[in-house]
Image (cartoon, rainbow, N blue to C red; front, side, top):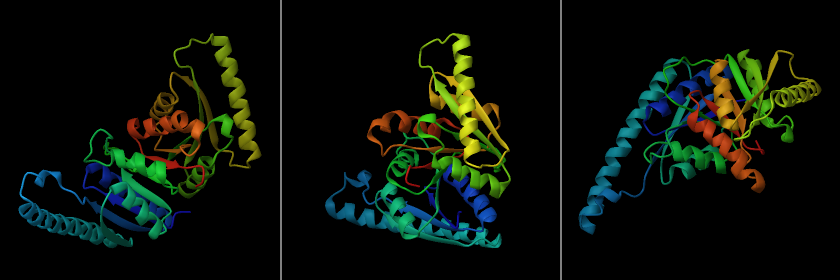
Length: 288
C-alpha cells in the first residue's frame, strides 16, 4: 500500500522524527524514500542594504544554504543506504507547502512524512503541515520529537457515525495487517458545555457502540478490533486523551476540509489533534 514516501525536512528535530517513521514504514512496506528540502526565495533580513549589496548577499546566502542542505541530505542518503533503503532527494526553492505538494505529485508518492512543528512558529513546519493537509490528496504523516520508541502496535481510528466507516478505517486496517497491530475504533460524543444525565449518556454510548459494531461487522473487517465510545467537551480532546490512556502508537484520521459545511467543524478537530497529540498522526482527505 506504501511504495514511495516523500520526507520533507526543515532541519528540525520534528522533521527527523518524521524521517524515523518514514524509515520504519519503508522497511515494513519495502518502500523508497524521497527527501525534499525547500529553500525560501525571499530574505527580508537583507532589506536594509542597498539593492546591489542585497542581491550579492542573497546570492551568497542562498549558495551557502543550498550547500548545507545538500550535505545534510547526502548524510541521510548514506545512512539509509547502509540500512539497504533506497533514498533520493531534491532541493526546491519557493513556498514550502506548495513545493511539498508539487514534489509529492511529481514523485508519485503514497505518503508524505512531515515534522509537525508549531503553527505559531513560522520557522517550523507547523503552518506548512496545515496548508499541505488542506490542499493535498495524498495521505500525510506528521510526527513530533517526544523521545518515545518508533513502533506501530496500536492504531486509533476516530470515526463519526454521520460518515459511516470512512477511508481512514480501511487505510488503518491495511496498516494493522502490515504491522500486526491492534485496531482501536473510536467515536467521541461531543458534550460542549452541556451536562448530560448519566442514564442518557450511557444510553447514547451503548447505542453508538452497537451501531459501530454493526458497521464493522458489515465491512468484513478482522475480528480483533476494539470499539470505544467516549464523551468529551471537544472531540479532539477526547481523541488525544483516549490515545494517551490506551498507549496508542498512531492515529489515522480524516479531514473533511473539502466539504464547505464541515470545514470548520471536522477540519478543526483534525488540525487540533495534529497540533496537540504527542504521537504521529496520518491524515487522509475524502478523496484519498
